[in-house]
Image (cartoon, rainbow, N blue to C red):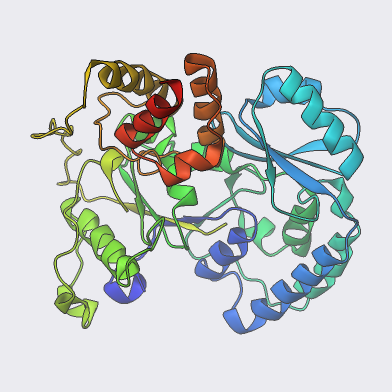
Amino acid sequence: TWQSWGITPDAVLGLSIGEMAAGLLADVFTLDEVVPAIAIRAQALEDSPPGGMIAVSASRDEVAPLLPADVWIAVHSGPRQLVVSGAGGPLAEATRILEGAGLSCYPVPTTHAAHCPLLAPAVPVFDRAIRELRLTPPTIDFYSAGTGRLVSADEAVDPGFWSGQLARPVLFADAVDALTDTADRLLLVEVGPGQTLSKLLRRHPAVVAGRHRAVPTLAHRPVEPLAQVRSALAAVAQLLAEGVAVDPAELGGLDDIGPAAQPAHPDRQHAGSPVLATAATAEAQSPEPPAAADDPIAEPDGASATVTDRLRRLWTEVLAEDDIAEDADFFDLGGNSLTAMDLMAKVRAEFDVDLGVVILFDHSTLDALAGQIERRVG
């Protein structure tokens, strides 16, 4: 769709299965050929020994020494964002150890331990499928979360590069480091469903500093009938604001659904898949800092103001975000399931109340969560 709007990526990057989509966009293989191979990949995973994965809010240096045998770091997706994999018994032991060390853990809904040696039996099955493809060198820069760096022509045409990733860790954070290590200003456009990668990218130091900008295409929570279309048009507006040429005529019949959201500061944007990295034009300027809210939501009384201020401080610690408005949405500011666990653990310690993570999903603005806390602390 972005290409039909005249936007061609300068580079691509995916996470796990999203790496296959990135390879497709880089012309390493064709759609007709790769889809059957991906189906074989899925079956090979299904036939693998059972296991599990847990997300951990911590750094590699903190987690690695604590892991028992047969549990491995499987995904490094961002600052203090890891996933570990293993069989059921060792993984339960790892959870006990990690939580005992004060680290937040969250089970990943899966029946297998991906990106670790337990998937070694699936590798040759997928390898045979990859060897049936006509692999060609990438036509654009292709960054791999499997290696954490730019993919060479020789790697791209090596079947083992692709099949071996099933049993190797995902180094998405390292790949983002390599991708963003440039003087050019990049627009990092997420092209898959949801905003998982955009939220990870918004926590990257280069994006936080304003050197690059992360733009999701689709909505995080598409509750309205036209939410996805509006979100896509808002993404177009952001690229236009950065000086990227988009031909309005190519947007087809999308101009009669009402105004798209206006481009805002990237950290205030409402908004497993690849990221398209597109360089902004030389004329594009860095976004202006967000203006203060003209009409902040009134706080009902002094006690609520105290709760709100204390809660705002916790949000700042978790999100590395200053000047958080009362109506700011935790997930629109880059929060995700891991940082949500971190926040609610801090809420429990700060207010001596255990609300559970699900409360944050239902009451995700600062003032709404403050109201829930106030009801429980009296």
